Image (cartoon, rainbow, N blue to C red; front, side, top):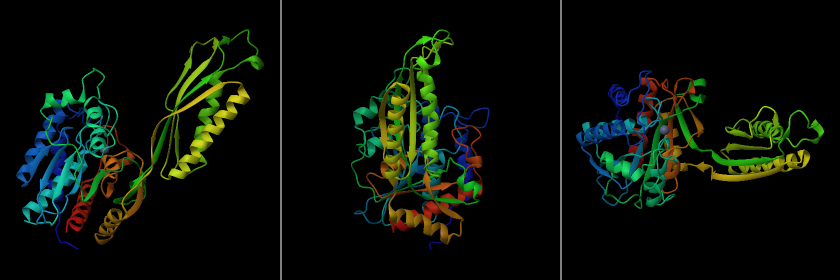
Length: 409
Ligand SMILES: [Zn+2]
């Protein structure tokens, strides 16, 4: 085991310093992608990385790469990093923790004059949250070839401004080609954004992958009718049908406990009038599971239920899958390196599947990838009260350093 230790207090000071950029009165941050707050945090990251002996480059999607050269020019870099942008009422750890844990790795290597064989890079990925420009993780997606550069730059915010123009405006429209270069491995550190680690009193989540997601838009067509004159037996009430569907989606998830998720987040009856039997309902469904076959079974269960419902209630049902993000299994060697590092440092740990999307999920398409989770208070994230402890933050950064040193040796 290497004896290099990260400086947990310095990391915590960095976290506190960045939390002031875009700070909200309730203790969170508002650092929406490509706003002035995002620019200021990017500038500070670039300045601190240079002070830690790195070169800093920016690509055409505004992704920033702080690089510390290795001793073997033939080796591709071992990369970490995450995102600086936040939700409008975001917390002070989501994203920025992974960036600053990476910065702490760079600083530790610099102050101990430690040289790795492979270069070490810390990336800041543009617009991870997708809050201003949909979709989320668009810039790591372009890097990994999931989207074209034109697609990425032409995303628009609610005011019609393009991501490309917003990059120009804050001075982060870089010149480097996006992606298309080899990475030795990618390790992203992040808060869990869920309750499992805290509940079990564990410090390190060894992230083995991310769950698959299927998103649906569903329309149930019945017949609008007078609420007073239409006998119950003669109705084609689309909303009562949708109510059954909402419960069925919950039951489909329950049948695949404990890893499945099923959510109806949008439901719009038409005409939405108190004394008209609803003739049509639009609703969404979101199904998730870490195992792709199980998720496919949930898809069949949903479609089967909707077909039966349609017959039974004499409604027309249209089920359209609008997005399918397959389950991701991270690289065995990288995952193993995280698990062994946690064991060596005697941190309580467990394997865990990410419930949220992360830049690492796209990067896993082009490089051996894994993630390190640390607990967050109450599992709360995307919230100004998001919180983590200095001890856990420090532990996660130490594991990151250990793993990167091993992979870069
Ligand atoms: Zn995040």
